[in-house]
Image 1 (spheres, helix red, strand yellow):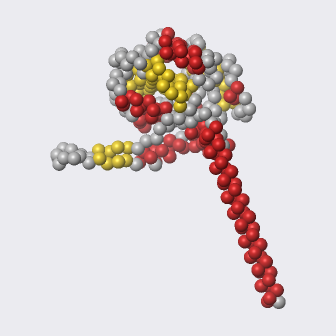
Image 2 (cartoon, helix red, strand yellow):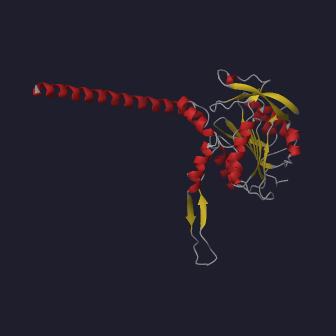
Length: 322
């Protein structure tokens, strides 16, 4: 009887070990194919890191859940708590250690880091202002967030009320309250062909963030389950620059306007505005990108590079700020 019991126990142990081995190998292969799929996504996707990560539905769901103030809070409690201490080289009693804080480039594909390195290496005399058209939540893939951290003034233009509220939350703690030093303006409107009110299509998909005018035909939101039409305020570039006193020569113009970015570029140029750098998303615009490049070249711009979905242009005549 005891021998029989030992035999059954032996069978059970062998069966358990075999099952464990099968499950372990399954987990290894599953992990391998997940990593392989993620690497293929990084290799084949043309956008920035968030575009590549959000190609995975599970990661996309995580980002969507974290977008509602979660990522901002995580940064606040982790990276923003870390700093480097630099001690003075002399023994002057009036010299104190200085703190250097760490940061993360929050732009889609490192656009801001790329531009800022050029700014530091040049005699930059433009007004340190970023005009961010299509600011979204002011954090994820933002071309203005890091500049606000660095003390730049900003005009954040975003038509969707929920995203504008998030932009205020995500940038508020970095704003110097002395208006003579730094001024952040939040413009809840879409930049369009005329002033007034219009219908706007809003999707809740973080992987695309393709909100756009209802009169546009946008292939990007086909298949998106949750979308709705809301009324928004629409203003022209002329109204924007006049009402908010935008100088003719300012630091960075970022355009993520889902199909009308070419029109916005032309409006700025025709009105005589020459920002030092233009970050331009060409997706869904009617005007071919080569035409836009040629148009900007005629008006003093050099096409520097493409980072993710964005083309970066630099104004070659670095005149003093107005």
